[in-house]
Image (tube, rainbow over all chains, first blue to last red; front, side, top):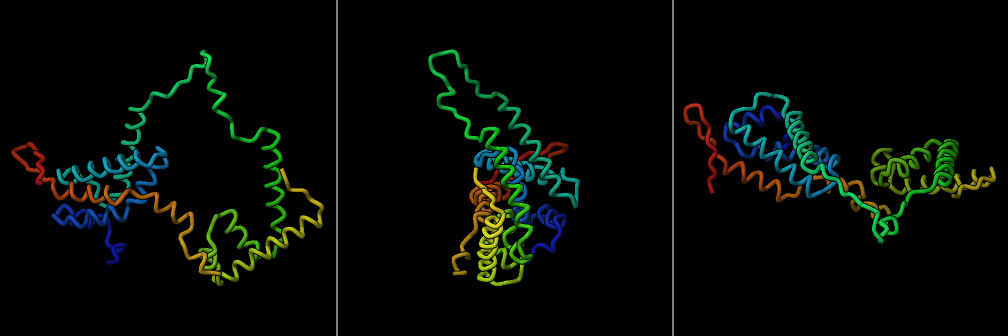
Length: 194
Length: 50
């Protein structure tokens, strides 16, 4: 069934008329967006699951009580409910864990800063900007594949679909992009290590 | 060689993870089927059919 042609408002109407499958279609259509929105705020799968469930329980109860009056704007309405429930969650969990460092045990002996120090971060940023300049010298087709693979994290299957070439051609272009990049670096006597 | 790339990419896997569990969706559908709202004068009563 190609349900993308059926507007949300029709599915809501069907659901209000007693068609339970319409709710399934609405959840199926919007679950990814709503769940991703919740997850992007709470960063916890179990909590996201709970908030998603509470969101739709509220949706179902409101619809069945006949209190829904935003026909045509189903998704924004559900997103607003999810948003409010996320806020409720954070209000409930306002307490932050606190570490007092006045005993024998030093918390910083087990907590370390994994990040780079300021100097290494500067070098890393410089290398990244150098590489971004260098890749501009690659032929257009190689640059395209390299950008999609490295910067957009696309698979070779996705790259081949996007560029309209076979996977093997995309792989070949990536290989030549790296070979050419090494040549450019050698030619310029660059050292790109941290 | 191309066949190696037909398995799910990390992005697709991530995308799968960004969905509620099927059990959650099933629970909601069952909840919806079980819930009845009964109007009585100006009041609404929720009942659950098991």
